[in-house]
Length: 392
Picture: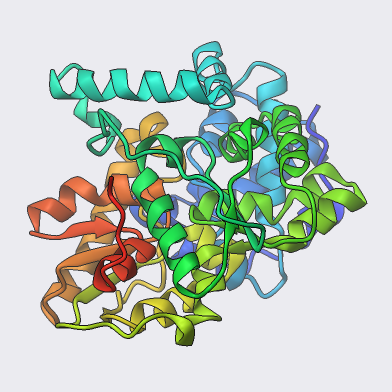
């Protein structure tokens, strides 16, 4: 039985202001693939006793969970929590999240296994054994050394996939933290996964397990800096997910690394040499959930000339594991993003797309390369410009 908060469900007045901000509605033009349509389907199950049939599952599983509808909603509908509860019910009844997906997600909490598996997958990519339709960017066979703690001013959350695939970004973040005169501490194995992908998949209990381990691994009052927008969004919602005072206190300590550095941008060294031209792509969980996208502009503006897209932050289609699970829809959504990128290229000549989320960066990488663009995290751009990048 689907049990949803009836107040949250009834808050939607079907005004349709969410429609232009929903990536799946934009590419299909079908009401059922919009927030309004999905809420109507939820109401049919909750209020009218309709079955959660294959069509219902399709509508729910094709949601990217970008939450672009939430800032646009005049009724403040909490669509994200409604979708999470619906996904959790589908997963608990075996209607979604098959065994192989659960097995893959379980590996995220075992960091050594994840690192070894990632290297093996990278080798398989080089041998062209990984289907291109999965949309994976080129994974590293080797990675830089792991960070070592320098002090106690802040925690640097390194996580799972981010550490396996984009560890260089952690090193850039660490270099910038040091450049503003602060020290950092790296958590132990308990913080090896934040649970974001589990939450997207409807595995609520597993998410809470990861949350409790992460909270325990980073005690005290120091800020917790996160350089993956998707991870940061979930970490900031631990209070609601876990429901304890300890979790709420922890959630209040979480800060996106761009947000933290932007507040200290005047303490960074002055750049030398030419300013790069950087095109900014906002990850949905930075713009729509954390709502701190202005920090990226402040930080990048210290070293670069920033070029904006004209699509009002429309999703790129990465959505955590969404691009691998729904490759056709994710590809269509990405094409709309590149239409906005191509329009920007008519106005300016950027050399790199800055994106503060690993999934977005990898999802955009191939199309960006075809246009002569690199894709990098904002902290990588800044560290490179300041001569602080530590790649090995």
